Length: 431
Image 1 (cartoon, rainbow, N blue to C red):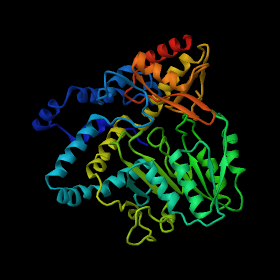
Image 2 (cartoon, helix red, strand yellow):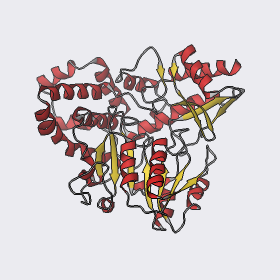
Image 3 (tube, rainbow, N blue to C red):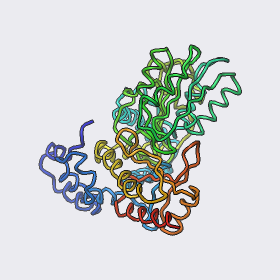
Image 4 (cartoon, rainbow, N blue to C red):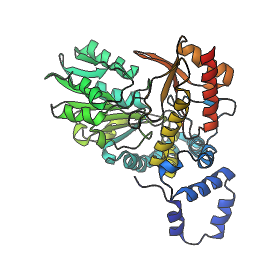
């Protein structure tokens, strides 16, 4: 994807008018400073900016995160930058002036441009993108909408997200389908091994494979395309859970080989809480039933998946500002920074006695998310210590063979924040 070039944009406008100049002067200092930082950085490669604390300090100023604690659980839900918050609040006020008029006749008109913008960063057609509220809704639209019969087999993994696992178990209970479970030893730095565990589970009865692109438990990146290619060679459809990968690192949805894909936009895109996206490959739309009934359930129009009734239009339309912020930073810059931050703290603690890492340090196998544990201590004890003693907010994981505290920085996280984390882990390991 092309890196956002603000200088070219300004040059295209020509000379500033007096009105434009005054408007720029009334913008908050953090916004003007970020503009300057972006201009200064535009000729630097993304990897050169990854450890540039001055540049990322100006990005941090775009957020309103609490100074009272260090939030390192951005994998759960990310805060939105101020520009997104302001847009949502403005649209909410606008809606309340006359809801049925401003929501349905005015704000709703922004959905098609928004659909095109989401498709642009997803690398697909706008006719394959539906806007909804979160990854669970998107993925369960597919899980409950597929035409499956008793005896049909679904391949999925023990590390898939619980909402999806429960949805598949409900179909198993109601429809008699058969769930085939893949198990993995994590973390892994062997794509052939991970893909093989899925592929060997395929049989002539397999109808679909459910692939989680990034496991929320420890940040493991799964070789989705390798699995998808093997599945398609056998006539098997592919559903990809992209909740923790979309706008986290660079890829396009078609590059994964997905027939169906769901994600939350309030995670790595930093859109408002309660926004998500569903992708359905164009030739699959007609055969998938919508989760919420549409006038024609078998039409091949992606919009049939958006019959949610009255919903918060002000949240939906603010997604556009999140896309703008994402473009402004640049996907490659963001990926490099997130990978740098994860490796910064993990490298610093990996040799501390009793400390164990559960996430790879190598590129391609993890990006921002990392998990750490301390021998002889529970994940909950580490979680509580970090918060009570250092006011560092994380979450703890106890799932299959992953047990530890999950640490998830974001673009507003500084190395000073992580230095505090490193100190805290070291102190805890001594207790």
